[in-house]
Length: 550
Ligand SMILES: [Zn+2]
Ligand SMILES: [Zn+2]
Image (cartoon, rainbow, N blue to C red; front, top):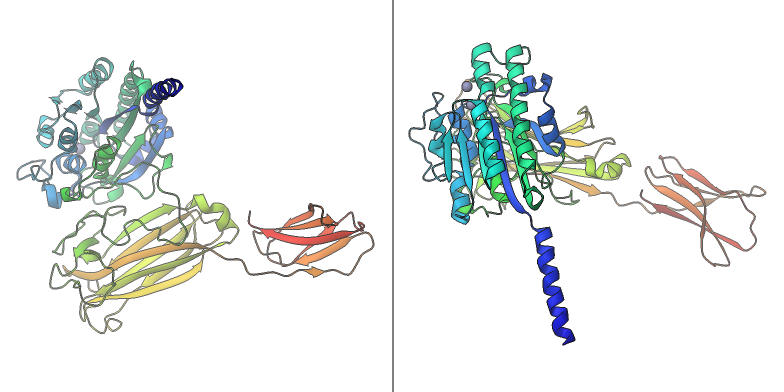
């Protein structure tokens, strides 16, 4: 009888616990069309600031190289770049799209659970071409109308994933021009911020809000259309906000395709490799820094698919990629390194490739988690990679790591690569290069730049290649140390210890070995340090010196 009662009690307890522990995951995506970060920086946007504070953000999110709405939003919905979805028209045509092969995340969501309420609101009805699978698809003629209906649905219905968009910022750009100095453009950003605030307030006033886990994503598709300066055209804002989101600035910076993986992951829909997506999850806490394994994300170029042509700008997962460097497939083209030629043993399918001209990609990783070890000079690094080119051609690749402090000031730099045709013995393939050193004190970020340099300008082929880029941090092992008793000074007992920087030395005393008492402590800075027992002489005393890391 007692057993049955206990079982019942446990069953009730687990039900209650399940209710508390598993809120319903939901996503609200707010697009602000045509938002330039430099103008956002001067606008008063308290609602966006609030969302940033409750999550993470990037002002350097990368968009599709065709800085127009159709190409950019198609990339967001499908999670693939334009060489797959084929919406690359600056005129915003969806003709020839590959949405059957690369459907929007709405199809993936509905496929996993058709009971989900999925909604897509547009300010321009052709955009709905990309989302045939959403339960509700509506287009609106004003930002006021779309905001009102978004709030209405959030208040009076039960959406699971809702995409909505504001267009007036982009319209202001077309009418008045783009940028921080264009008053009417900045004013429109402030108005959009107010509408974001309305939507967020509606969301948080939901009767069931406490049982829900909302992820709010705010992003833009491009800044000023077609501007050659990517800071004005391709760089935009991403905010990922909510209880599940990481906090602070997102490193490495995200791309517009990443929204797809993020929505699916938050909604617990597993991403099938067969979908051949180009995206990664953004905005969730990253795994802790591990010593002894590479900290470069996607250093092996395998996170997304490569190409067999000398394409421009493939969009490389985890890398800030606005220049020409791309991903090639081993053996995919007669000019590419082959699967069996000179190169790494574990080479996978893809390598980094110059593409069509001189280019680069970069990645910044946050090392603040290991700040105390860095400042105590306890960390060494090992930088390595494979670098190559084709035949007698002198296109070369290099990997540079810049060590940055908290303010982004460069503390030091290291470069490897630059493998010449002679180094390769004129073969088409890759050769390994590496370097080692100590992580500078005060280092908080490591920024990696893979540069692929075409030997001749004006050529349409750049064969510089690289693979298996790696940056490993190691906690240095401490050398053994010995202590030196000092000549006796009446009333004192002193020793000299080596004083290794960042290490704490403790002098301990024991009387007849009945426990140990710390009598002096000092932190090493390099030169030997003296430790003194001020109470000496103590009858029957023994001494020992210990060393530890902070
Ligand atoms: Zn747009
Ligand atoms: Zn526009």
